[in-house]
Length: 267
Image (cartoon, rainbow, N blue to C red; front, side):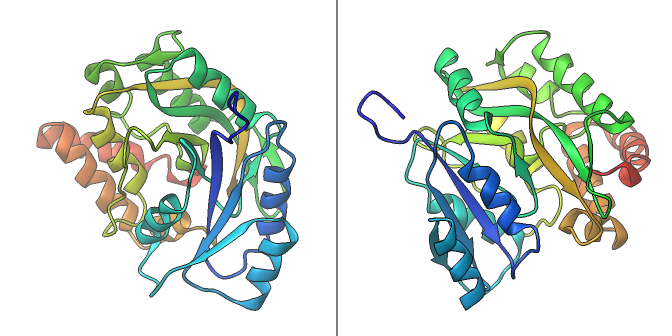
């Protein structure tokens, strides 16, 4: 809340069908130490989904027809009415101080337009929480190569250095300053749409801020869009496209091959 009591942050939850993990996600949003309004956005409405929204006091917004994950994210963000918003993925969990910590960091860095937090993984079907793995270590190293111990970076070079070797910032850990930027996700991409959006955002004014603490858990399971994209070869193609925009072709090819080795570790 600001001094006038108006909420400064909201969660928007793109929901496809009725995820078995949606209630757990919404419960974690309701348990935040600083409350945020929550809106469920969907192109696949159903009485069951509407009932869950009512159960958790969440707004419910419908769009159509279903046109993929990019359209879902863009519509969901359009429903946020606060300066800051997080796209909360329906399978993920948020630790109780996620919002409080995000807003505190944003207050310390008023030039920030993107705040990212550290994250762990929730492995299915066992439900094991994992905060250390080779992939998580690599992503934390990539973050430090850009931030170098700082809480925020504002130069285009530092922000893009963060993204040149892959995308260490998962979308559900990110909060965006919507009263300063109007991010649009490409609707023709299925896996790397967040990486591509951060790359464009890095060229614009405003800082990226980073809280290193693990404040949310990203669920890894075979039913996710990322896992489907890996199996169908979509991720490999989109990764190569991204590296081609950043590097000469021989380097892009090598990086894409190296990045593919990480796929089984999760994204």
